[in-house]
Image (cartoon, rainbow, N blue to C red):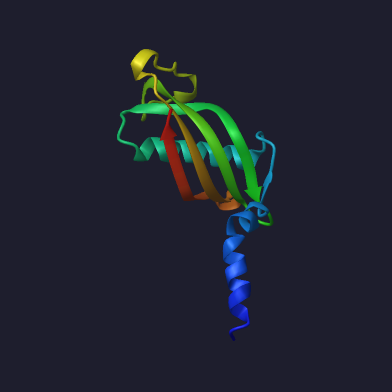
Length: 128
């Protein structure tokens, strides 16, 4: 039993490096990835207190977990002049001046596209 302790401690020390091999880069235009991006932005808009909607400016990182439909994405979002429940947020102009906030967010989304089911596993955002 005690011989397993060094193995466990070694795995804990390597934790971040072990996890990094689980995700691999993918193209930013795949259909499943695009649906996950749309879900993540919608979730962000619904759960932030600002009345104005944020829209995608660019995708900084696009990855998926090997052997699964879990996606990791870094998204750069900008605050628009539209309200979060408006119809066409993608074509809405960005706010300018001090109101023109931008955020960088990292999302991990599990997807089941056949059932149109998405689950946000983790998200962190930082205002720029």
